[in-house]
Image (cartoon, chains in turn green, blue):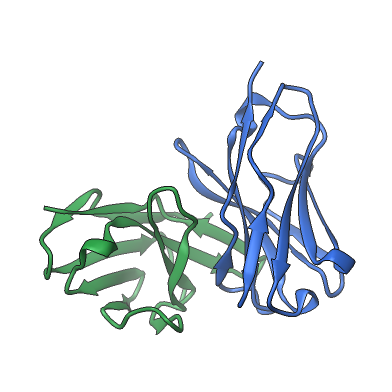
Length: 108
Length: 119
């Protein structure tokens, strides 16, 4: 089974900061990784799919990248409304979806 | 506008049965998968399975196979998740989500249904 680890957790930053969350896969998964945002009491929301692609309607301050089995999610210019838990999600061809443990982001 | 609206919170006793629903609108029900995701404080988000109303294909997470049943009613564009015998460990929030035919992302979500199983 492929395992997903996320770091850091939690994460505290100031408004306007550049924030990066990392998700590491236990083996090569290509670009098969999505990122979701979940605000307290709400359902998850898709932000990035296939490692790099911004879901339509999502602000451009959110971005994703990949280096081997390491995936990064970046918020360029943290806003107060970005306080949430962020999850990576791997998918394979079964299909089987595996979520990371989440990274809670709050404002200093 | 794409919408997935789930049924309300449930409180059940161990051994009881339950069926929760996910009513969709704003798109062609038959051409997207519906997935179900469980969320608990201890295990986080877990994918349970997907169902494709276009041809009734189902894919279960092996961890949930035999524990729950996914179904749908095309005429009222509603998907269902069902338990025959609930256990306390089924206490969780359950989300439905839409997935495109290739099934690689969950692009719209329901608001969640809280299920509490307690004697």
